Image (tube, rainbow, N blue to C red; front, side, top):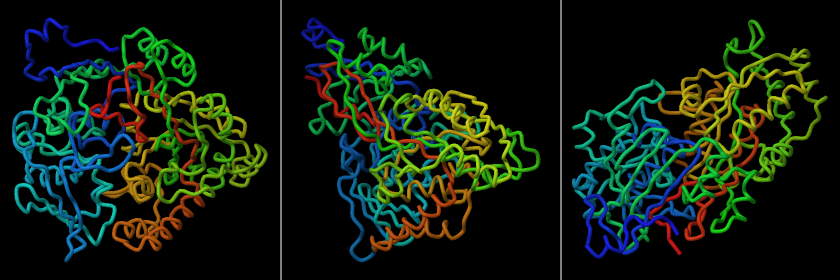
Length: 530
């Protein structure tokens, strides 16, 4: 079992904590993973581990449960208006309090969605179809879209609600500009409605949460954890050692080389599931001349034959067997099987030999190859740096010399967001479970409110028009046909180099009863203890 927060004597005395009154079986959960949250500002970053910590503290109108199904959160009911399908009406949960005691009302919803749609927000691509957010009364909100949007609710599961007064009073009306290096009050302080409250935070060291004594979800969720101690541990060996020794109770990312060791250990278990996330490489195809390559006055990535040669040279089976120890699903498309639009044909890995790839390079005018720098994270995805190292060897076989630079994700992601990387690794989860999410962030021409993670420079006006049309197309057959056309263009142009879909391996003590969530989002209010 995990460490008791208080002994029987304290319980007998009726000890009370201001932040977390004791439950009958009050427990501390010690949780670790490779990397920390990038910020506590809930609209500043669209990144999995950042959302994971935020979900404990903040809430959206809706959320996905541990099976990935959409369930009510701060909204109890939602539907398009019968006389206007462009307007979704949300009924808000009554008697909800923020952690500082303030009431949650429709004013906070209007404020939060408008804040999430600001230029510095990383969440604005999820709101591109929103025309206006209106308060009907204190517990009712209308969201009007530009045409009927059947997927609006899918876009709201990570759209966190903030206290408008608290946000204004603390001078953080706009989301933190993470890519620009800004630091704000909201980056390290919180005031949500969620099951847990922030007690202390030391970035990259430790974050402590305690149970919200006024949480609306009492009686609806197990809520068996009264304190969470979150510790980022970058070293795989150290992270596993912490679990084996009992220093931590739960780790999200058991290294693939240690799966059997953890699963065989007394008192521990590994729970596995396919993840809604794909790993791939992106290339700057639009620059006239790359900063980091050996070619003067030209960009080798601008030639589709170079991109196809590189894709052909990736030995995904070798990565799966050697690097991932079987814990991955090789793919040729940048969406996981969970996503609407996925097909076996798109997923099929391309055939071709090293000689075939060399011929494509020669046809493009690079028979002697070239060198280029690859930017890679070393604390974000499963074996991210090892995958990049494997790619270096695979590219060398066709004459491309790759110079690898691996960095923590906090330094890696701004390179992509600021469009300053020539060649980079990225992983992409799809919380809406629909292709539009992939297209809007990764394929659409970069504009003020779309294409924020499209560092490739790919731009096609016809494709952009089709992407936008998906937001209001209610004929599902027509919509799916459009999705197919966009994917055909993405694959034809070889915009990205897909590698595999991730497999999740959560390690935990036997006393923890917790299924793997497909988005790698452990919502601890659902956790049960045996």
